[in-house]
Image (cartoon, rainbow, N blue to C red):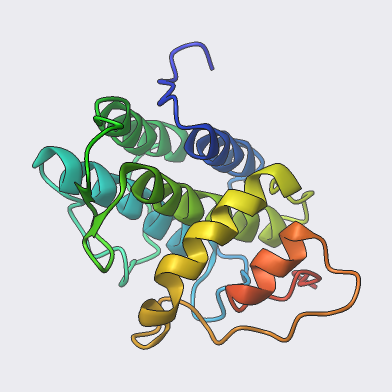
Length: 199
């Protein structure tokens, strides 16, 4: 998409593209499909992912946050999903593109609420990337995660995920398996079965 905003943060740009690609494969009848997030259907995962990107932007810029609680998504979509997604990604990208890379820390919506610029951008990427995977799996499409993207996401996941498990943002980690690549290792750490299917 020619109008997309590039943040300059490699992992975040890749994760935003993965989320775009995953959502582009969702058909009008797919929004009620089950996802790897056991309690949420595809529409709810989409809303959560959108809300979180707006939340990261809001933390950085002070602009309004999402108009709903991303952790209690309704599943009722309002507006064209592609446009809703592009608005959220645009807000996030503009905010991250304006971050001073030399800053000691930047505000984030996730604990510890202040992180290094790299870690903050990677946390935003982690959210977009893992939900891109959730959406792709729900619609039977190939994984949008690559080993190159999974590695920095794992680095930041190990910084932030454990405290988030306590209030349900991530499931318990699954046991690593012999032969796991970087993508499978990341997914298991986030409590996801790399071989999950919608069937």
